[in-house]
Length: 82
Figure 1 (spheres, rainbow, N blue to C red):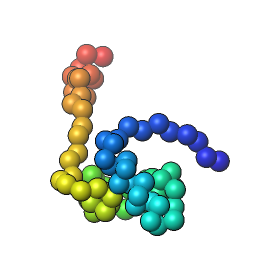
Figure 2: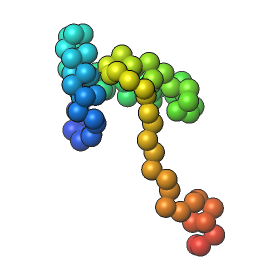
Figure 3: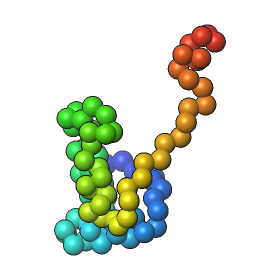
């Protein structure tokens, strides 16, 4: 059963990804599902081991950048406060 997910991406990435998907006769949804299946296959233990940079470079131009949000509170501080 399919479920819907809302994601936000840079407009240029979306444009390039749609073109890549179309050139491979696959919908952008199925391409995204394929990529998620690959990264959740338990073959990779950390983000550094993921071949995401290769996939992103296939659908976008420019440097690959990973953006993460810092935690508001560290795990150790959280548990100390309990």
